[in-house]
Length: 88
Image 1 (cartoon, rainbow, N blue to C red):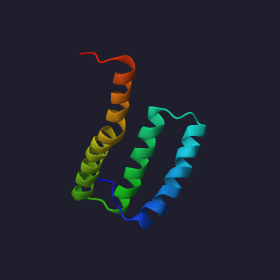
Image 2 (image 1 turned 180 degrees about the vertical axis):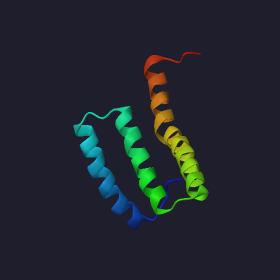
Image 3 (image 1 turned 135 degrees about the horizontal axis):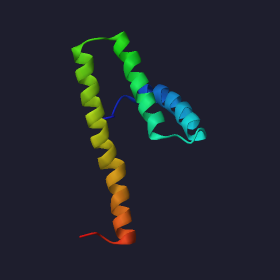
Image 4 (image 1 turned 30 degrees about the horizontal axis):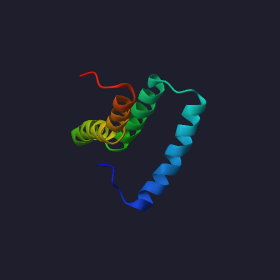
């Protein structure tokens, strides 16, 4: 899913790092994260308006959630099961 060429990652990661640091310094909220994602989508949509862009956003958001859950959230939950015991 998020496997883009390394040179593209480096440019994007610099910007994400700065934004992330700012948000952490502000003690970010879900509203802040929602705002960032929304504004990015609005800017990109104005650059490339159309149904395909809307469809691409929907797919990217769905796949991003799936990848985040698979790679980050599920391992965290597995760790907590080991620490605290399973509910089943």
